[in-house]
Length: 475
Ligand code: ADP
Ligand code: ZN
Ligand code: MG
Image 1 (cartoon, helix red, strand yellow):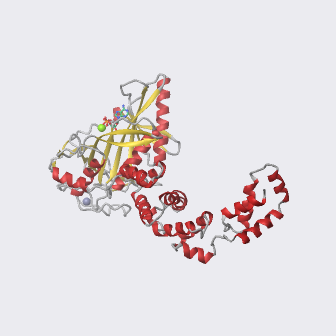
Image 2 (image 1 turned 30 degrees about the vertical axis):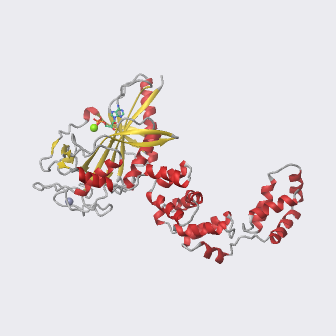
């Protein structure tokens, strides 16, 4: 029997508000423990929460960017449970009346377009963080994160493979970053993802029993954890076992998911409307205003890049994955850079150098103007494409203009035919054996001759002239 996987994701995104959801404490990451707290966010008795207007706006902005219905009325609820990082004994969240209703996002996986439904998006407060001492058995609680606004995006069980799940999270991450509501940082935990997974025989309409997987804090781990879990469940069913509804943790070291708690141990959260907060009543005109302020989103930009700049789909995918990269690209094109060349340099050398340094394009020393300056040197024949790579890296390290680097390092392309011819003759006179084999039909040796000339001229010989000369002389 063939099985298919059914996956629904719950994504938690910390909102980029300056202050917490119900008090004025800072949301800055990485400060000393408990330095960003007050009676409200440490849950003292008698205090009252005051709603952060920006947090509401950010969730609505996200809903509008993901085709969600925005109801005019929504409400906050208390989710009751006991845990040391939750000083009030309840989390203020949303239950029956979330800020955003049904929506969807489009993803492309291996060329296939898929529409993934969203069930809802709601707003809640984050909890604190337990810190367990590495030695001894002490534990500590840091409440800096308690009360940071957290948005939860819940998908329909529309996802079928681990790759689709990764694309879905990537797309949502790109959207929240574009619209400036979350920094999308997965290793600092500002974007976290839980996955609900079940399997069923292909053709079956009913859903199987699901397991919820937690603790996957990178795209790679999401893919690995889901692949592992799908295989585990299919094997269990083939072996005649039943899947139990449970929460499982991804164990990075072992590369497996492990049972954390079963449904029987699950909480009854006793949700009820929070009596300290008024229901949220939105005005349609306010929602329209939020909609009007939304920037061009990744999908729209991608389509425009393909049609306006005549780019291959993969180039458009990469360039629009980050708004800063898309902006950089467009600035270079506006300054006269050829769109394909600009894209190729971003995809190739630029990405390689930035990756090595773990930097983003906005921190790059090469500005769009510097790249366009270098491209014009290539066009004019001043430098070869090969030398350009050296110049590009020097530009990256120093921020100097290409023309200055070329001048300083004497990298101007050698296009003087008689000069190159002398070197070609010299190489040929030293390679009688190779010439014989070449004439005997070993065409690959052309590369050897070109390589020798390039080595001799430190890559500066104009490759077109080198090739012409060699072809003429080896006839
Ligand atoms: P719970 O009551 O356990 O919170 P929900 O029905 O609220 O479950 O769904 C939570 C998430 O799990 C959603 O993303 C949903 O799409 C997904 N989901 C629900 N049932 C299944 C299933 N049988 N298989 C896979 N995912 C599921
Ligand atoms: Zn506070
Ligand atoms: Mg639920």
